Length: 274
Image (tube, rainbow, N blue to C red; front, side, top):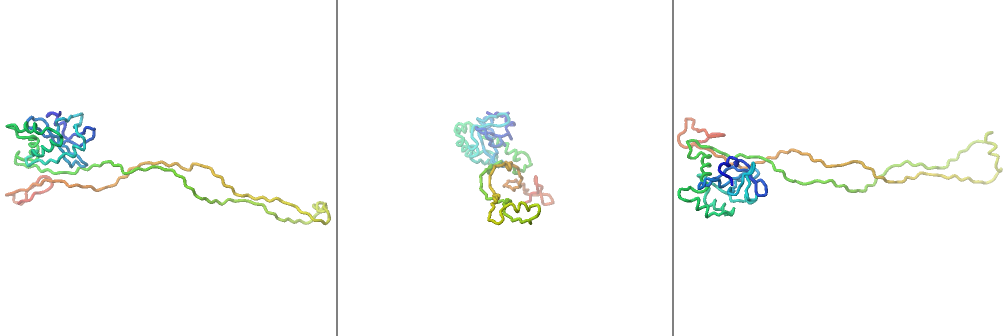
């Protein structure tokens, strides 16, 4: 149970569900005016912290630098939407819906909250909201606006793998080959070869054989490594435009204004007269 003294340590701190998943961050704490104890957490969640969700505080714990609640993330995010009334109160019917949604005992809590002299549930939180808005405090008025909080989320977009497969290609190579052929060489009779020329019969028939050779191409194959391939990831930065709708308060002046006919508004401009 989170006590009143622990509220400063809760605000703007992350909230985790029973599975250890982050839900969002605490932006407001509403008190039970009957007991003065923290009763509801107002948690902002979503990509740009655009969604506000109420979570019961009765079984929540402050652990180190975060808050843990006994509900899973999806249940909290699907809780009924809540709109505070003009005075910053949590309307009874919406609070009843929250009690039903979180399976809490509404009847006993409602009876305790509406005892004589009590002003209702979440009244302290309502007063805090009225102070933030500048209602009933002094003659000044606070102007607030929503601002976009831009961030990024990492998503899986695909995968890549290296795959080796075999293809068959036909290659042609020009190979030089040699062959033998017969050529008749004639020489005249000289004193040097006359004895060899007259060593045989005078006139007779004869024949001589010569064996011829040639080279023929042959194909053999061997496997050799030619390269290595591996995958490496690199990051590239693109620019994408993203936007969202934000609400901004404007301050107008009714009645008499100064001689310029304009009244200065808080923040980024001037209000107009009516």
